[in-house]
Image (cartoon, rainbow, N blue to C red; front, side):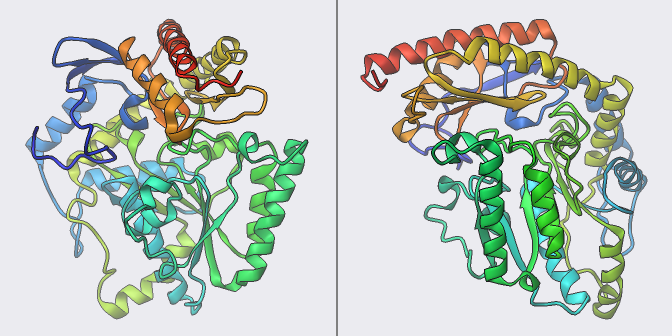
Length: 450
């Protein structure tokens, strides 16, 4: 075994699959086995593997200017061009963009900029951040504290109180409904719970609420209709900023330019990474409105600098990769392609799996989806220790399909957005074979009710 500390891995089960190369929607292991990469790596390789245009853009930039920092007045054309491009795309008023390296550090940057901004306007008490149960926003100290998944919090002693993190209800009707509650009643209840929490905490102490338009690692939760309309009305009523974490949803994943567009969100802040460069080079973006940027200018002048930034903020090769990726999205109409193929994939998923005895719910939008695997289809009872998720994930890999079990027993899929309908058919056929095999295995183990 290599002396590697592997991320998000059980240290007793490392190095199970060694990938060697990729092409299109496929990856190959070192034994020559071919797999459909059904999770686009980690929700990120939107253009698939071996896109020569992006690789050439990176290589060209490396030959021209392989590195330049952007501290202390220094800049370069790729970072300025990328910022202008994003400003023209995002639904944020007069946007300004800070570039980093990952979604985690981008959310940490937002956390710090919110502190900086409210100090600048004389409201230092306005520092609490609302997140949601089952939310995922990264793994750095602040972003990891905004994350609500047990595995990301256990044993790390996250400084939740020191960082003033508040948690609200997850907007998942299937697992969160009470009795015969309708979706509308469910939404009204959790929005009412949130308002009671806001009033108890004092709205003047709450800076923002962070939301993923559609969640990823927590199981691809698509909030019910009306949720975001009522959520935003409540937050704006109390002067709380809307912070959209678009790390997974951004750039075509949901069948639109952004998850905010799909879900009807008008954000104040936005976080990007992953599909910004199709993951070919690490880059992230923290987007704030112009009025927030303007309020911080005097403080930076007083101190002498805005005392935040990374060596690789706006790395020229990363910016070149992102610029080429955005060009390809626009030129090849890939957001429209994702909408069309995504609609097809969602329909096929429901046709194939809605009545499957192992599947309690099929959910998703565009080219992101999940199956909720249950031990009892009538009650929606789950499996202990993610038994179904683990069995289905392994069966998929055995059938040449790489998917990921998230939130225990949700089997997530999120293929590259270049995928075709024929490739979707192949992917779902392999998935059906795998879910059937997992069901048989779980039933033989006595884990299926009835």
